[in-house]
Length: 440
Image 1 (cartoon, helix red, strand yellow):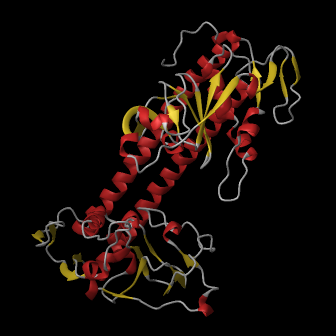
Image 2 (cartoon, helix red, strand yellow; image 1 turned 90 degrees about the vertical axis):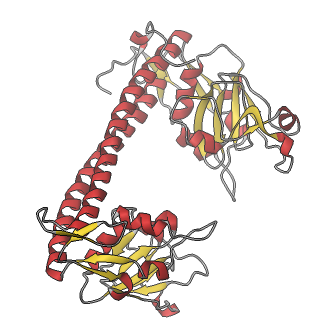
Image 3 (spheres, one colour; image 1 turned 120 degrees about the vertical axis):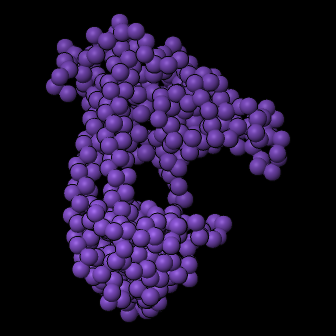
């Protein structure tokens, strides 16, 4: 923050985790500035309580918000619903905080609204700049989480929240800080959005290149023929068409108690669309009562649950895995790396996805997957395609990783900038006369 000047004089805040603050600032408990209003939920069995016009905020609504203000909710309630539950309507410009599952999401009410019991509303009892206090609450989410209590889930109580320390600059300074942070965070957010778009485009290109290589090969001048498979189209003339069940065998060997020392791979252990193993040290624990399957080095593991269909790896060690992963051992005429790349291709994922069954946890069956016809080059050409794709995707993944690191640094800088401004570690009074930029 060396680009910003500091205040001339500081004093101790009396709060260890805040440290020094500008000499003219005050420290007050939250209850001296805000009234805390709890939320509530109407009975779900009463239809006339729901689908009304009253915005009813939940932690889930706050979690999806990308703006300072919140003006709408996934579900709304009626006047009858409001009257017959503990929720209370709070005025526009109240500050809304999630105080359970999880603690610390925050927004400013853009309309009169109410919340469920997972949120609390802070209604100002004094004249304040609500945008400044939004940023203050946002900056101390770590502290609010530390105040949470509970066994089943952590919750921030009214008594704990009421005693949270607030820093009170003058109104002009509150306005200047709010304007400064809105402008600077908007600039940072725009940079982050641009970089996230680049990552999205790189990921799309990565998938498209894989699909092209495993269905068309690497030679753009090769003679083509109709594959007879609608979702694949034309393939090189010299390639064969074979069913997956003739190119690989499914391994259904159940793990025993004696296999508990083997590394366990769950669905969450595999990164979607990249085939990267996120852990190989038992970070993903086997669910109690779940039957695990044994896999061997060189086996292809493919997630059959629909939300996880883009999860596939070639195992480079012996281990055990969730039964939601198909364990496949390829035949001599197919490289495991080639099957893995084919199964990660979007065209394959799409056709398998269309076959999934089940309401709550839709999954694909081996009967369907095994009977799919796929194009098959000879082993030498498979090796060439695998070498090309592994090198290219590794380079793209490195680039994506570099951009992701840049995004993380921007997010950390954003958080630090907010914290430094709302605690007076930097002086932004030069922004006092800026025009108001926060949407009303």
